Image (cartoon, rainbow, N blue to C red):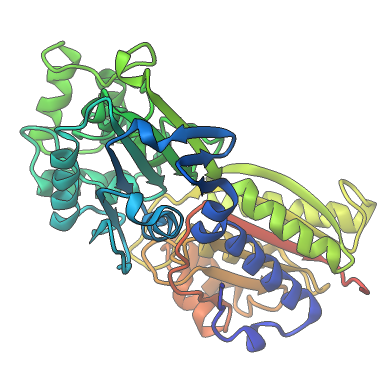
Length: 446
């Protein structure tokens, strides 16, 4: 399914080609069509999600609502399973999809736009008359925090956009960003479940969050929320974010108890809610590992939970490869050393790039000319503010150390890597289970 542009050129050696094959396999394994096929089925009136069954004769309506970068793909896959058993729905996603029973609204990511606001409004209207005989299939995938935008009362879209942009550029962790988003929203932090109650809700989740915390994925629209207005305000203060007055007024009103908190785990709205994580970062890593093993490599999955500053995480990944080559620890070579997670970038300059490109460039500065190759991509096909997935580098990528270091200092990794033919382009992949990093050390004989 995944088609890497200029793959033949990028595959300069067997190690390069192996890294690309692992990347392709990882992305394909997390594609909504594959994931839904593996986890959701219909037999007569019985809908099965993982091991849980739903008797559709118990429901008058089956609604599909939600959003995220993989939202369109999940929706079309659900339509292929359920067909006209779907009564209607609205899903907000980043790329258009042709659907028959569910309206797909194309919103904006990572900063919300008016289309996302309108899509969220339509979802809230659809859920307004949900009752005990309604089954809601909640499509919850990475990116919905921005795409499924429903500013809380008193918050304008412009104020939400400014706050989101400032948070993304601050270096804040995703759970910190989402704590703020939840308390400026009418759907996040379990509030979509609140709107759907007393309907039965099945959350179909593709996770792009380290550790699969349901309250963080897409800002947890169908999950209980333990974050507070006070914590959200602390995030703004900690990162020195000069938020619009309406945002601070909203958060301060919440701290004072004048605005209701997001629902906790003991809230009755969750009595008929079940969330299913259908795919996550480990799904991609597992598939990549299988490809590497089949090619004769020893393998090691460092973690699916790598986080922190991208350029620093890159040094650690390279160091593990160096150790493997020198001592056989933690894995004998030739080896493929894999990792996933979500690293961040603290914006210091006005260049172009993203976390995976910074990861790759920082790694390239550390690599020697022994043939070690590193690929780093965002599985959704878009890394940061650039429409590329990431990069593939080796010890010869950096031919000007000073320029490479300057590119990192100004967050301008993309042009440096692009000029050297190191960029990986997949186009929109239709999925999003966070980042995938592949380090190939040595060359295997299959």
